[in-house]
Image (cartoon, rainbow over all chains, first blue to last red; front, side, top):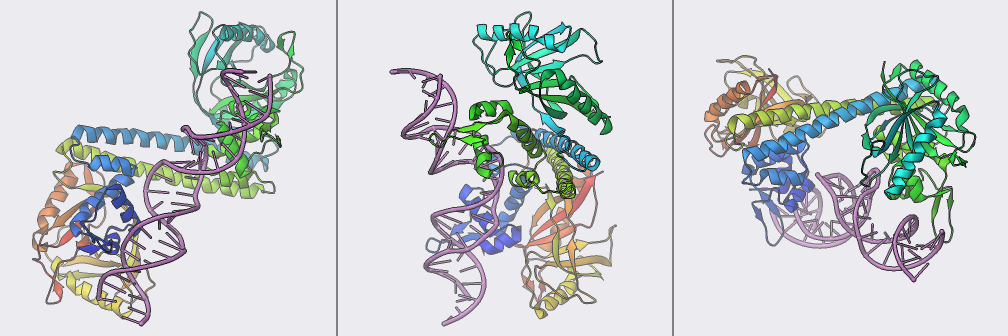
Length: 276
Length: 276
DNA sequence: TTGCTCCTCACGTCACGTGAGGTGGC
DNA sequence: TTGCTCCTCACGTCACGTGAGGTGGC
Protein backbone atom coordinates (compact mmCIF):
# COMPACT_ATOMS: atom_id res chain seq x y z
CA UNK A 1 0.00 0.00 0.00
CA UNK A 2 1.28 3.43 -0.95
CA UNK A 3 0.31 6.93 -0.05
CA UNK A 4 -1.54 9.28 -2.36
CA UNK A 5 1.56 11.26 -3.31
CA UNK A 6 3.37 8.17 -4.48
CA UNK A 7 0.42 6.87 -6.41
CA UNK A 8 0.08 10.28 -8.02
CA UNK A 9 3.72 10.26 -9.10
CA UNK A 10 3.37 6.72 -10.38
CA UNK A 11 0.36 7.56 -12.49
CA UNK A 12 1.66 11.00 -13.45
CA UNK A 13 -1.38 12.90 -12.23
CA UNK A 14 -1.80 15.44 -9.44
CA UNK A 15 -2.78 14.56 -5.90
CA UNK A 16 -5.80 16.79 -6.32
CA UNK A 17 -6.84 14.76 -9.36
CA UNK A 18 -6.77 11.57 -7.32
CA UNK A 19 -8.87 13.18 -4.60
CA UNK A 20 -11.28 14.33 -7.30
CA UNK A 21 -11.59 10.82 -8.75
CA UNK A 22 -12.15 9.46 -5.26
CA UNK A 23 -14.97 11.93 -4.75
CA UNK A 24 -16.56 10.91 -8.05
CA UNK A 25 -16.10 7.25 -7.19
CA UNK A 26 -13.99 6.60 -10.28
CA UNK A 27 -11.10 5.09 -8.36
CA UNK A 28 -11.28 4.63 -4.60
CA UNK A 29 -8.30 4.19 -2.28
CA UNK A 30 -8.09 0.59 -1.04
CA UNK A 31 -8.05 1.96 2.48
CA UNK A 32 -8.77 5.27 4.18
CA UNK A 33 -7.38 5.78 7.65
CA UNK A 34 -10.35 6.49 9.83
CA UNK A 35 -8.50 8.93 12.10
CA UNK A 36 -6.23 10.86 9.77
CA UNK A 37 -8.27 10.53 6.60
CA UNK A 38 -5.09 9.48 4.75
CA UNK A 39 -5.84 7.68 1.49
CA UNK A 40 -3.86 4.52 0.70
CA UNK A 41 -3.61 3.00 -2.78
CA UNK A 42 -2.27 -0.21 -4.25
CA UNK A 43 0.06 -0.77 -7.19
CA UNK A 44 -2.61 -3.09 -8.61
CA UNK A 45 -4.81 -0.05 -9.14
CA UNK A 46 -2.43 1.25 -11.79
CA UNK A 47 -4.06 -0.49 -14.78
CA UNK A 48 -7.43 1.04 -13.88
CA UNK A 49 -5.83 4.43 -13.61
CA UNK A 50 -4.14 3.93 -16.96
CA UNK A 51 -7.44 3.04 -18.55
CA UNK A 52 -9.18 6.05 -17.07
CA UNK A 53 -6.53 8.36 -18.47
CA UNK A 54 -6.66 6.69 -21.87
CA UNK A 55 -10.44 7.13 -22.05
CA UNK A 56 -10.14 10.70 -20.91
CA UNK A 57 -7.62 11.33 -23.63
CA UNK A 58 -10.18 10.09 -26.15
CA UNK A 59 -12.37 12.96 -25.00
CA UNK A 60 -14.84 11.23 -22.70
CA UNK A 61 -16.04 13.13 -19.65
CA UNK A 62 -15.36 11.66 -16.21
CA UNK A 63 -19.06 10.94 -15.93
CA UNK A 64 -19.02 8.93 -19.14
CA UNK A 65 -15.87 7.12 -18.06
CA UNK A 66 -17.64 6.11 -14.88
CA UNK A 67 -20.36 4.54 -16.96
CA UNK A 68 -17.89 2.93 -19.39
CA UNK A 69 -16.04 1.27 -16.56
CA UNK A 70 -19.09 0.15 -14.65
CA UNK A 71 -19.65 -3.58 -14.92
CA UNK A 72 -22.45 -4.97 -17.02
CA UNK A 73 -21.66 -3.01 -20.16
CA UNK A 74 -21.91 -5.21 -23.24
CA UNK A 75 -19.42 -4.99 -26.05
CA UNK A 76 -22.18 -3.53 -28.23
CA UNK A 77 -22.94 -0.72 -25.81
CA UNK A 78 -19.27 0.01 -25.49
CA UNK A 79 -18.84 0.08 -29.25
CA UNK A 80 -21.85 2.35 -29.59
CA UNK A 81 -20.36 4.87 -27.16
CA UNK A 82 -17.03 4.80 -28.95
CA UNK A 83 -18.65 5.25 -32.33
CA UNK A 84 -20.63 8.20 -31.04
CA UNK A 85 -17.43 9.77 -29.78
CA UNK A 86 -15.82 9.03 -33.13
CA UNK A 87 -18.51 10.95 -34.92
CA UNK A 88 -18.15 13.85 -32.50
CA UNK A 89 -14.42 14.02 -33.08
CA UNK A 90 -14.96 13.96 -36.83
CA UNK A 91 -17.35 16.87 -36.45
CA UNK A 92 -14.83 18.74 -34.31
CA UNK A 93 -12.14 18.32 -36.93
CA UNK A 94 -14.46 19.60 -39.63
CA UNK A 95 -15.37 22.58 -37.44
CA UNK A 96 -11.75 23.44 -36.76
CA UNK A 97 -10.92 23.20 -40.44
CA UNK A 98 -13.72 25.60 -41.18
CA UNK A 99 -12.31 27.95 -38.57
CA UNK A 100 -8.90 27.71 -40.12
CA UNK A 101 -10.27 28.69 -43.52
CA UNK A 102 -12.14 31.66 -42.09
CA UNK A 103 -9.09 32.73 -40.13
CA UNK A 104 -6.98 32.63 -43.28
CA UNK A 105 -9.52 34.89 -44.92
CA UNK A 106 -9.10 37.44 -42.12
CA UNK A 107 -5.35 37.24 -42.45
CA UNK A 108 -5.39 37.74 -46.21
CA UNK A 109 -7.65 40.72 -45.75
CA UNK A 110 -5.31 42.27 -43.20
CA UNK A 111 -2.31 41.76 -45.44
CA UNK A 112 -4.11 43.55 -48.25
CA UNK A 113 -5.75 46.44 -46.55
CA UNK A 114 -3.29 47.02 -43.70
CA UNK A 115 -6.18 47.96 -41.47
CA UNK A 116 -9.34 46.21 -40.55
CA UNK A 117 -11.48 49.28 -40.13
CA UNK A 118 -11.14 50.54 -43.69
CA UNK A 119 -13.55 48.13 -45.28
CA UNK A 120 -15.88 46.31 -43.03
CA UNK A 121 -15.94 42.98 -44.76
CA UNK A 122 -16.21 40.19 -42.22
CA UNK A 123 -15.94 36.49 -42.95
CA UNK A 124 -18.25 34.48 -40.76
CA UNK A 125 -20.16 31.27 -40.46
CA UNK A 126 -23.94 31.49 -40.67
CA UNK A 127 -25.89 28.81 -38.81
CA UNK A 128 -29.00 27.33 -40.35
CA UNK A 129 -32.25 29.18 -39.80
CA UNK A 130 -35.77 27.77 -39.87
CA UNK A 131 -38.55 29.90 -41.29
CA UNK A 132 -41.35 30.51 -43.72
CA UNK A 133 -40.35 31.02 -47.32
CA UNK A 134 -41.96 32.31 -50.47
CA UNK A 135 -40.22 32.39 -53.82
CA UNK A 136 -41.17 34.11 -57.02
CA UNK A 137 -40.02 36.01 -60.08
CA UNK A 138 -40.40 39.79 -59.97
CA UNK A 139 -39.24 42.52 -62.38
CA UNK A 140 -36.81 44.23 -60.02
CA UNK A 141 -35.58 43.81 -56.41
CA UNK A 142 -37.84 46.59 -55.03
CA UNK A 143 -40.79 44.59 -56.35
CA UNK A 144 -40.13 41.88 -53.80
CA UNK A 145 -42.71 43.71 -51.73
CA UNK A 146 -45.20 41.71 -53.76
CA UNK A 147 -43.84 38.63 -52.02
CA UNK A 148 -43.41 40.09 -48.53
CA UNK A 149 -47.02 41.30 -48.39
CA UNK A 150 -48.62 37.87 -48.84
CA UNK A 151 -46.00 36.21 -46.60
CA UNK A 152 -46.74 38.58 -43.71
CA UNK A 153 -50.48 38.13 -44.24
CA UNK A 154 -50.08 34.38 -44.14
CA UNK A 155 -48.07 34.54 -40.90
CA UNK A 156 -50.62 36.91 -39.39
CA UNK A 157 -53.52 34.67 -40.38
CA UNK A 158 -51.86 31.75 -38.57
CA UNK A 159 -50.85 33.90 -35.58
CA UNK A 160 -47.20 33.01 -36.01
CA UNK A 161 -44.56 35.55 -34.99
CA UNK A 162 -41.20 36.09 -36.60
CA UNK A 163 -38.28 35.08 -34.44
CA UNK A 164 -35.62 37.09 -36.24
CA UNK A 165 -34.86 39.44 -39.10
CA UNK A 166 -36.29 39.25 -42.61
CA UNK A 167 -33.99 37.70 -45.21
CA UNK A 168 -34.05 37.91 -49.01
CA UNK A 169 -32.21 35.36 -51.15
CA UNK A 170 -31.23 36.13 -54.75
CA UNK A 171 -31.30 32.90 -56.70
CA UNK A 172 -30.18 34.08 -60.13
CA UNK A 173 -26.75 32.86 -61.12
CA UNK A 174 -26.17 35.77 -63.48
CA UNK A 175 -27.08 39.39 -63.43
CA UNK A 176 -30.61 40.01 -64.65
CA UNK A 177 -31.96 43.09 -66.21
CA UNK A 178 -35.47 42.04 -65.36
CA UNK A 179 -37.23 38.97 -63.96
CA UNK A 180 -35.40 38.38 -60.71
CA UNK A 181 -35.78 35.03 -58.97
CA UNK A 182 -36.12 36.10 -55.33
CA UNK A 183 -36.96 34.17 -52.16
CA UNK A 184 -38.28 36.04 -49.15
CA UNK A 185 -37.77 34.36 -45.84
CA UNK A 186 -39.14 35.03 -42.36
CA UNK A 187 -37.51 33.14 -39.46
CA UNK A 188 -40.01 31.41 -37.17
CA UNK A 189 -39.89 29.02 -34.25
CA UNK A 190 -43.51 27.88 -34.18
CA UNK A 191 -45.27 25.30 -36.28
CA UNK A 192 -46.84 26.63 -39.47
CA UNK A 193 -48.88 24.74 -42.09
CA UNK A 194 -47.58 25.01 -45.64
CA UNK A 195 -49.52 26.27 -48.62
CA UNK A 196 -48.92 26.26 -52.39
CA UNK A 197 -47.08 29.57 -52.04
CA UNK A 198 -45.61 29.43 -48.56
CA UNK A 199 -43.25 26.64 -47.57
CA UNK A 200 -41.50 26.07 -44.26
CA UNK A 201 -37.83 25.26 -44.66
CA UNK A 202 -34.42 25.48 -43.12
CA UNK A 203 -31.89 27.79 -44.74
CA UNK A 204 -28.67 25.76 -44.94
CA UNK A 205 -25.58 26.53 -42.93
CA UNK A 206 -23.06 28.73 -44.72
CA UNK A 207 -19.57 27.73 -43.65
CA UNK A 208 -18.02 30.97 -44.85
CA UNK A 209 -19.84 34.11 -45.86
CA UNK A 210 -18.32 37.46 -46.79
CA UNK A 211 -20.52 40.09 -45.18
CA UNK A 212 -20.88 43.86 -45.17
CA UNK A 213 -23.35 45.95 -43.30
CA UNK A 214 -24.81 48.67 -45.48
CA UNK A 215 -26.48 51.69 -43.90
CA UNK A 216 -28.39 54.06 -46.15
CA UNK A 217 -31.26 54.24 -48.61
CA UNK A 218 -32.00 51.02 -50.46
CA UNK A 219 -31.61 52.69 -53.89
CA UNK A 220 -27.87 53.15 -53.46
CA UNK A 221 -27.17 49.71 -52.06
CA UNK A 222 -25.54 48.79 -55.41
CA UNK A 223 -22.31 50.41 -54.23
CA UNK A 224 -22.08 47.98 -51.35
CA UNK A 225 -22.74 45.08 -53.73
CA UNK A 226 -20.09 46.28 -56.12
CA UNK A 227 -17.39 46.62 -53.48
CA UNK A 228 -18.27 43.33 -51.84
CA UNK A 229 -18.03 41.59 -55.22
CA UNK A 230 -14.67 43.21 -55.84
CA UNK A 231 -13.48 42.16 -52.40
CA UNK A 232 -14.48 38.56 -53.06
CA UNK A 233 -12.55 38.50 -56.31
CA UNK A 234 -9.49 40.26 -54.97
CA UNK A 235 -9.25 37.93 -52.01
CA UNK A 236 -9.25 34.74 -54.00
CA UNK A 237 -12.83 33.61 -53.47
CA UNK A 238 -15.81 32.92 -55.60
CA UNK A 239 -19.46 33.16 -54.70
CA UNK A 240 -20.97 29.77 -53.89
CA UNK A 241 -24.67 30.05 -53.31
CA UNK A 242 -27.39 32.67 -53.41
CA UNK A 243 -26.45 36.04 -51.89
CA UNK A 244 -28.60 37.00 -48.93
CA UNK A 245 -29.83 40.33 -47.64
CA UNK A 246 -30.67 40.49 -43.97
CA UNK A 247 -32.75 43.43 -42.82
CA UNK A 248 -31.00 44.78 -39.73
CA UNK A 249 -33.10 47.93 -39.43
CA UNK A 250 -36.15 47.87 -41.67
CA UNK A 251 -36.78 50.95 -43.79
CA UNK A 252 -39.79 53.09 -43.05
CA UNK A 253 -43.03 52.22 -44.81
CA UNK A 254 -44.29 54.31 -47.71
CA UNK A 255 -47.84 53.53 -48.81
CA UNK A 256 -47.55 50.17 -47.09
CA UNK A 257 -44.31 49.21 -48.84
CA UNK A 258 -40.64 49.46 -47.84
CA UNK A 259 -39.30 52.93 -48.56
CA UNK A 260 -36.48 52.88 -51.10
CA UNK A 261 -35.12 56.20 -49.91
CA UNK A 262 -35.20 56.03 -46.10
CA UNK A 263 -31.57 56.80 -45.15
CA UNK A 264 -31.96 54.98 -41.82
CA UNK A 265 -32.25 51.50 -43.39
CA UNK A 266 -29.57 49.02 -42.44
CA UNK A 267 -29.02 45.86 -44.46
CA UNK A 268 -26.39 43.14 -44.12
CA UNK A 269 -25.32 41.65 -47.43
CA UNK A 270 -23.98 38.10 -47.19
CA UNK A 271 -22.14 36.30 -50.01
CA UNK A 272 -21.54 32.59 -49.39
CA UNK A 273 -17.96 32.00 -50.59
CA UNK A 274 -15.42 29.26 -51.17
CA UNK A 275 -11.79 29.58 -52.16
CA UNK A 276 -11.55 29.99 -55.91
CA UNK B 1 -33.27 52.74 -29.86
CA UNK B 2 -34.47 49.23 -29.21
CA UNK B 3 -34.83 47.12 -26.12
CA UNK B 4 -32.51 44.30 -25.19
CA UNK B 5 -34.90 41.57 -26.34
CA UNK B 6 -35.15 43.03 -29.81
CA UNK B 7 -31.43 43.55 -30.14
CA UNK B 8 -30.93 39.96 -29.01
CA UNK B 9 -33.30 38.65 -31.65
CA UNK B 10 -31.66 40.83 -34.26
CA UNK B 11 -28.20 39.56 -33.47
CA UNK B 12 -29.36 35.99 -32.81
CA UNK B 13 -27.93 35.78 -29.30
CA UNK B 14 -29.59 35.41 -25.91
CA UNK B 15 -30.56 38.32 -23.71
CA UNK B 16 -28.28 36.87 -21.05
CA UNK B 17 -25.40 36.98 -23.51
CA UNK B 18 -25.96 40.68 -24.10
CA UNK B 19 -26.02 41.35 -20.37
CA UNK B 20 -22.81 39.37 -20.07
CA UNK B 21 -21.11 41.41 -22.80
CA UNK B 22 -22.30 44.58 -21.10
CA UNK B 23 -20.74 43.45 -17.84
CA UNK B 24 -17.45 42.71 -19.61
CA UNK B 25 -17.60 46.05 -21.41
CA UNK B 26 -17.53 44.38 -24.84
CA UNK B 27 -20.64 46.11 -26.09
CA UNK B 28 -22.47 48.63 -23.93
CA UNK B 29 -26.07 49.73 -24.37
CA UNK B 30 -26.25 53.26 -25.78
CA UNK B 31 -28.48 54.16 -22.86
CA UNK B 32 -29.44 52.62 -19.53
CA UNK B 33 -32.56 53.93 -17.85
CA UNK B 34 -31.46 55.18 -14.50
CA UNK B 35 -34.65 54.16 -12.70
CA UNK B 36 -35.58 50.84 -14.28
CA UNK B 37 -32.12 49.71 -15.32
CA UNK B 38 -33.53 48.88 -18.78
CA UNK B 39 -30.82 48.60 -21.40
CA UNK B 40 -31.39 50.29 -24.78
CA UNK B 41 -29.41 49.47 -27.91
CA UNK B 42 -29.08 50.95 -31.36
CA UNK B 43 -29.27 49.28 -34.76
CA UNK B 44 -25.90 50.85 -35.50
CA UNK B 45 -24.37 48.52 -32.91
CA UNK B 46 -25.13 45.54 -35.10
CA UNK B 47 -21.83 45.56 -37.05
CA UNK B 48 -19.84 45.48 -33.78
CA UNK B 49 -21.96 42.61 -32.55
CA UNK B 50 -21.40 40.81 -35.82
CA UNK B 51 -17.66 41.27 -35.52
CA UNK B 52 -17.62 40.02 -31.94
CA UNK B 53 -19.47 36.87 -32.93
CA UNK B 54 -17.18 36.30 -35.90
CA UNK B 55 -14.08 36.58 -33.70
CA UNK B 56 -15.62 34.29 -31.13
CA UNK B 57 -16.31 31.77 -33.82
CA UNK B 58 -12.61 31.83 -34.69
CA UNK B 59 -12.00 30.62 -31.15
CA UNK B 60 -10.93 33.79 -29.37
CA UNK B 61 -11.97 34.24 -25.76
CA UNK B 62 -14.12 37.23 -24.85
CA UNK B 63 -11.13 38.68 -23.08
CA UNK B 64 -9.01 38.44 -26.22
CA UNK B 65 -11.82 39.90 -28.30
CA UNK B 66 -11.92 42.87 -25.96
CA UNK B 67 -8.27 43.46 -26.67
CA UNK B 68 -8.64 42.89 -30.40
CA UNK B 69 -11.41 45.46 -30.61
CA UNK B 70 -9.75 48.05 -28.42
CA UNK B 71 -8.43 50.97 -30.38
CA UNK B 72 -4.72 51.44 -30.93
CA UNK B 73 -4.03 47.94 -32.18
CA UNK B 74 -1.73 48.00 -35.18
CA UNK B 75 -2.27 45.74 -38.14
CA UNK B 76 0.89 43.87 -37.16
CA UNK B 77 -0.35 43.14 -33.65
CA UNK B 78 -3.66 42.03 -35.04
CA UNK B 79 -1.96 39.76 -37.55
CA UNK B 80 0.24 38.33 -34.83
CA UNK B 81 -2.77 37.39 -32.71
CA UNK B 82 -4.49 35.80 -35.67
CA UNK B 83 -1.40 33.83 -36.61
CA UNK B 84 -1.07 32.58 -33.05
CA UNK B 85 -4.68 31.43 -33.13
CA UNK B 86 -4.00 29.80 -36.49
CA UNK B 87 -1.20 27.76 -35.01
CA UNK B 88 -3.37 26.75 -32.07
CA UNK B 89 -6.13 25.58 -34.37
CA UNK B 90 -3.62 23.57 -36.40
CA UNK B 91 -2.47 21.93 -33.20
CA UNK B 92 -6.04 21.19 -32.20
CA UNK B 93 -6.71 19.52 -35.53
CA UNK B 94 -3.59 17.39 -35.15
CA UNK B 95 -4.64 16.43 -31.62
CA UNK B 96 -8.12 15.46 -32.69
CA UNK B 97 -6.75 13.39 -35.54
CA UNK B 98 -4.52 11.56 -33.07
CA UNK B 99 -7.56 10.92 -30.91
CA UNK B 100 -9.45 9.58 -33.88
CA UNK B 101 -6.66 7.11 -34.65
CA UNK B 102 -6.50 5.90 -31.05
CA UNK B 103 -10.25 5.58 -30.90
CA UNK B 104 -10.25 3.47 -34.04
CA UNK B 105 -7.72 1.21 -32.37
CA UNK B 106 -10.08 0.68 -29.44
CA UNK B 107 -12.92 -0.05 -31.82
CA UNK B 108 -10.94 -2.59 -33.82
CA UNK B 109 -9.93 -4.28 -30.62
CA UNK B 110 -13.52 -4.51 -29.44
CA UNK B 111 -14.65 -5.94 -32.76
CA UNK B 112 -12.02 -8.63 -32.50
CA UNK B 113 -12.15 -9.67 -28.90
CA UNK B 114 -15.82 -9.00 -28.19
CA UNK B 115 -14.87 -7.93 -24.69
CA UNK B 116 -12.47 -5.38 -23.39
CA UNK B 117 -11.53 -7.20 -20.24
CA UNK B 118 -10.10 -10.32 -21.90
CA UNK B 119 -6.83 -8.80 -22.92
CA UNK B 120 -5.79 -5.62 -21.27
CA UNK B 121 -4.14 -3.92 -24.17
CA UNK B 122 -4.77 -0.20 -24.05
CA UNK B 123 -3.87 2.30 -26.75
CA UNK B 124 -2.81 5.59 -25.28
CA UNK B 125 -0.79 8.69 -25.84
CA UNK B 126 2.36 9.13 -23.79
CA UNK B 127 3.44 12.70 -23.08
CA UNK B 128 7.11 13.60 -23.17
CA UNK B 129 9.11 13.04 -19.99
CA UNK B 130 12.29 14.80 -18.91
CA UNK B 131 14.91 12.83 -17.07
CA UNK B 132 18.41 11.46 -16.67
CA UNK B 133 19.47 8.83 -19.16
CA UNK B 134 22.26 6.32 -19.50
CA UNK B 135 22.63 4.04 -22.50
CA UNK B 136 24.84 1.02 -22.97
CA UNK B 137 25.22 -2.47 -24.39
CA UNK B 138 24.71 -5.37 -21.99
CA UNK B 139 24.56 -9.13 -22.57
CA UNK B 140 20.96 -9.63 -21.50
CA UNK B 141 18.08 -7.49 -20.18
CA UNK B 142 18.61 -8.51 -16.53
CA UNK B 143 22.13 -7.10 -16.83
CA UNK B 144 20.70 -3.60 -17.16
CA UNK B 145 21.32 -3.41 -13.43
CA UNK B 146 24.88 -2.48 -14.46
CA UNK B 147 23.39 0.70 -15.86
CA UNK B 148 20.86 1.43 -13.13
CA UNK B 149 23.49 1.22 -10.38
CA UNK B 150 25.71 4.01 -11.70
CA UNK B 151 22.67 6.14 -12.70
CA UNK B 152 21.23 6.00 -9.17
CA UNK B 153 24.64 6.77 -7.69
CA UNK B 154 25.00 9.76 -9.97
CA UNK B 155 21.55 11.09 -8.98
CA UNK B 156 22.36 10.52 -5.31
CA UNK B 157 25.69 12.31 -5.60
CA UNK B 158 23.91 15.36 -7.05
CA UNK B 159 21.05 15.13 -4.53
CA UNK B 160 18.46 14.93 -7.30
CA UNK B 161 15.29 12.96 -6.69
CA UNK B 162 13.31 11.01 -9.22
CA UNK B 163 9.94 12.48 -10.05
CA UNK B 164 8.40 9.34 -11.49
CA UNK B 165 8.87 5.69 -12.35
CA UNK B 166 11.98 4.13 -13.84
CA UNK B 167 11.83 3.47 -17.58
CA UNK B 168 13.91 1.15 -19.78
CA UNK B 169 14.08 1.65 -23.54
CA UNK B 170 15.09 -1.18 -25.87
CA UNK B 171 16.85 0.31 -28.85
CA UNK B 172 17.58 -2.78 -30.93
CA UNK B 173 15.56 -3.01 -34.10
CA UNK B 174 15.81 -6.77 -34.24
CA UNK B 175 15.83 -9.50 -31.68
CA UNK B 176 19.25 -10.02 -30.14
CA UNK B 177 20.60 -13.16 -28.60
CA UNK B 178 23.22 -11.16 -26.77
CA UNK B 179 24.46 -7.56 -26.67
CA UNK B 180 21.31 -5.60 -25.98
CA UNK B 181 21.33 -1.85 -26.58
CA UNK B 182 19.42 -0.58 -23.57
CA UNK B 183 18.73 2.92 -22.25
CA UNK B 184 17.80 3.37 -18.62
CA UNK B 185 15.89 6.51 -17.80
CA UNK B 186 15.00 8.21 -14.51
CA UNK B 187 12.42 11.05 -14.68
CA UNK B 188 13.57 14.19 -12.87
CA UNK B 189 12.33 17.75 -12.47
CA UNK B 190 15.47 19.37 -11.07
CA UNK B 191 18.55 20.60 -12.87
CA UNK B 192 21.30 18.02 -13.23
CA UNK B 193 24.75 18.45 -14.79
CA UNK B 194 25.57 15.98 -17.55
CA UNK B 195 28.55 13.63 -17.62
CA UNK B 196 30.10 11.40 -20.30
CA UNK B 197 27.79 8.59 -19.20
CA UNK B 198 24.73 10.40 -17.95
CA UNK B 199 22.80 12.75 -20.19
CA UNK B 200 19.68 14.76 -19.44
CA UNK B 201 17.06 14.49 -22.14
CA UNK B 202 13.39 14.55 -22.95
CA UNK B 203 11.77 11.31 -24.04
CA UNK B 204 9.66 12.20 -27.06
CA UNK B 205 5.89 12.12 -27.07
CA UNK B 206 4.40 8.88 -28.33
CA UNK B 207 1.17 9.62 -30.15
CA UNK B 208 -0.06 6.06 -29.90
CA UNK B 209 1.36 3.31 -27.74
CA UNK B 210 -0.03 -0.19 -27.26
CA UNK B 211 0.39 -0.98 -23.57
CA UNK B 212 -0.06 -3.94 -21.25
CA UNK B 213 0.52 -4.07 -17.54
CA UNK B 214 2.38 -7.24 -16.57
CA UNK B 215 2.28 -8.44 -12.96
CA UNK B 216 4.61 -11.28 -11.97
CA UNK B 217 8.25 -12.27 -11.82
CA UNK B 218 10.49 -10.60 -14.39
CA UNK B 219 11.70 -13.94 -15.80
CA UNK B 220 8.35 -14.79 -17.31
CA UNK B 221 7.69 -11.38 -18.76
CA UNK B 222 8.35 -12.81 -22.25
CA UNK B 223 4.75 -14.04 -22.36
CA UNK B 224 3.48 -10.53 -22.08
CA UNK B 225 5.88 -9.41 -24.83
CA UNK B 226 4.78 -12.23 -27.07
CA UNK B 227 1.09 -11.51 -26.71
CA UNK B 228 1.55 -7.77 -27.08
CA UNK B 229 3.54 -8.34 -30.28
CA UNK B 230 0.83 -10.61 -31.60
CA UNK B 231 -1.82 -8.05 -30.70
CA UNK B 232 0.05 -5.35 -32.60
CA UNK B 233 0.26 -7.51 -35.71
CA UNK B 234 -3.32 -8.74 -35.57
CA UNK B 235 -4.68 -5.24 -35.18
CA UNK B 236 -2.97 -3.81 -38.22
CA UNK B 237 -0.13 -1.93 -36.57
CA UNK B 238 3.60 -2.01 -36.65
CA UNK B 239 6.04 -1.01 -33.96
CA UNK B 240 7.48 2.45 -34.54
CA UNK B 241 10.13 3.25 -32.00
CA UNK B 242 11.91 1.62 -29.08
CA UNK B 243 9.67 -0.40 -26.77
CA UNK B 244 9.60 0.89 -23.20
CA UNK B 245 9.25 -0.81 -19.87
CA UNK B 246 7.90 1.32 -17.05
CA UNK B 247 8.40 -0.01 -13.54
CA UNK B 248 5.04 0.32 -11.84
CA UNK B 249 5.98 -1.64 -8.71
CA UNK B 250 9.72 -2.29 -8.44
CA UNK B 251 10.79 -5.84 -7.70
CA UNK B 252 12.41 -6.59 -4.37
CA UNK B 253 16.18 -6.28 -4.17
CA UNK B 254 18.37 -9.36 -4.08
CA UNK B 255 22.03 -8.70 -3.28
CA UNK B 256 21.52 -5.10 -4.27
CA UNK B 257 20.00 -5.91 -7.66
CA UNK B 258 16.43 -6.24 -8.91
CA UNK B 259 15.05 -9.67 -8.14
CA UNK B 260 14.13 -11.61 -11.28
CA UNK B 261 11.73 -13.85 -9.40
CA UNK B 262 9.75 -11.55 -7.13
CA UNK B 263 6.11 -12.30 -8.08
CA UNK B 264 4.99 -8.89 -6.83
CA UNK B 265 6.75 -6.93 -9.59
CA UNK B 266 4.52 -4.89 -11.87
CA UNK B 267 5.79 -3.60 -15.23
CA UNK B 268 3.99 -1.73 -17.97
CA UNK B 269 5.20 -2.59 -21.46
CA UNK B 270 4.68 0.14 -24.05
CA UNK B 271 5.06 -0.35 -27.82
CA UNK B 272 4.95 2.86 -29.86
CA UNK B 273 2.80 1.98 -32.89
CA UNK B 274 1.57 3.36 -36.18
CA UNK B 275 -0.91 1.89 -38.61
CA UNK B 276 0.86 -0.64 -40.84
C1' DT C 1 11.90 19.08 17.19
C1' DT C 2 11.62 20.12 12.16
C1' DG C 3 10.21 19.68 7.61
C1' DC C 4 7.35 16.90 4.75
C1' DT C 5 2.92 14.96 3.58
C1' DC C 6 -1.59 14.73 4.10
C1' DC C 7 -6.32 16.45 5.34
C1' DT C 8 -10.75 19.41 4.54
C1' DC C 9 -13.02 23.52 3.21
C1' DA C 10 -13.71 27.18 -0.10
C1' DC C 11 -13.12 29.85 -4.05
C1' DG C 12 -11.69 30.48 -9.08
C1' DT C 13 -11.87 29.11 -14.07
C1' DC C 14 -15.16 30.31 -18.92
C1' DA C 15 -19.25 31.85 -21.18
C1' DC C 16 -23.00 31.90 -20.28
C1' DG C 17 -27.93 28.96 -18.72
C1' DT C 18 -31.38 28.65 -15.38
C1' DG C 19 -34.34 29.73 -11.92
C1' DA C 20 -36.02 33.02 -7.96
C1' DG C 21 -38.23 36.99 -6.78
C1' DG C 22 -39.50 41.40 -8.01
C1' DT C 23 -40.91 45.54 -11.00
C1' DG C 24 -41.88 48.66 -15.23
C1' DG C 25 -44.72 49.38 -19.75
C1' DC C 26 -48.50 48.93 -22.83
C1' DT D 1 -55.96 45.10 -14.87
C1' DT D 2 -53.21 41.42 -17.21
C1' DG D 3 -49.50 39.42 -19.48
C1' DC D 4 -45.10 40.55 -21.27
C1' DT D 5 -40.46 42.28 -20.74
C1' DC D 6 -37.03 43.62 -18.11
C1' DC D 7 -34.17 43.88 -13.78
C1' DT D 8 -30.68 41.92 -10.17
C1' DC D 9 -28.88 38.37 -7.43
C1' DA D 10 -27.22 33.68 -6.96
C1' DC D 11 -26.06 29.19 -8.18
C1' DG D 12 -24.62 25.53 -11.71
C1' DT D 13 -21.50 23.82 -15.44
C1' DC D 14 -16.41 20.76 -15.95
C1' DA D 15 -12.12 19.01 -14.21
C1' DC D 16 -9.57 20.19 -11.56
C1' DG D 17 -5.81 24.36 -9.62
C1' DT D 18 -4.76 27.18 -5.86
C1' DG D 19 -4.43 28.85 -1.52
C1' DA D 20 -5.85 28.81 3.71
C1' DG D 21 -5.46 26.75 7.90
C1' DG D 22 -4.62 22.76 10.36
C1' DT D 23 -2.64 18.02 11.64
C1' DG D 24 -0.15 13.31 11.36
C1' DG D 25 4.51 10.72 10.55
C1' DC D 26 9.40 10.03 10.50
